[in-house]
Image 1 (tube, rainbow, N blue to C red):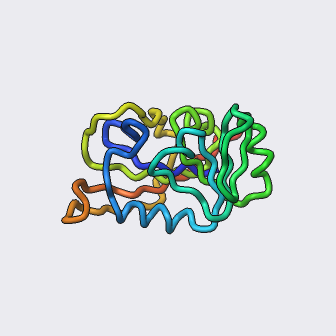
Image 2 (cartoon, rainbow, N blue to C red; image 1 turned 30 degrees about the vertical axis):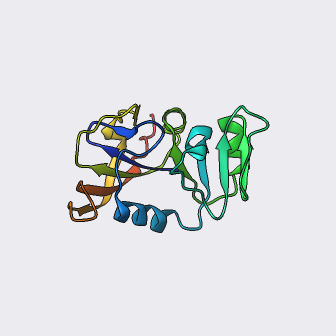
Image 3 (cartoon, rainbow, N blue to C red; image 1 turned 90 degrees about the vertical axis):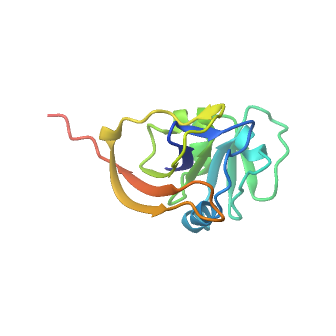
Length: 166
């Protein structure tokens, strides 16, 4: 399980069901990292106006049995059901929303976290992490320019394994 998310410095990940920024090169990074991989997301993230869907496979967490789905998409009523559907996949990218991030965070082994260098208003926030559980493995900064109102840093983290209890 890998979580991929962009958040502002004050943990905002959304406002009114959309991203509160437009960062074309960060979207390019997202597409590069997730190409050919399955996505796991909640219903609101799946149905958002700016939603990204995998061209390979999408699993949507929803209790709505009649949820309208696009091609290459399937519904799971619970996280265990979604995990069973995705059990054979090498890497699954979790796209949110907030409730899905909270539920999946203890299971995630990788975190692709882009930090937008701004404090923004929003109504959806990424959970606070215990950074002692994570090791930074890669980082790339992109400054503001004509196409990007904000600078951002694309970070990759690996979960630090728990030491064996003796």
